Length: 63
Image (cartoon, helix red, strand yellow):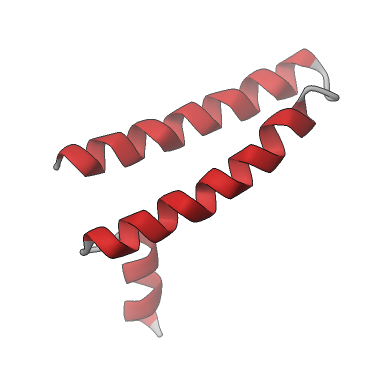
């Protein structure tokens, strides 16, 4: 069980990274438009999390 969790959080293969990217893309596609109903501070925080997540995927793609 521990190996499965580690592989989901820190994948070793490109296939797992692609699956993570697709899942998170769907999540951010739903959350970002919805965040515009919230106060500005919350929206800025959510956008920052999305950008951090995209940067993480980019860094792993280069590696």
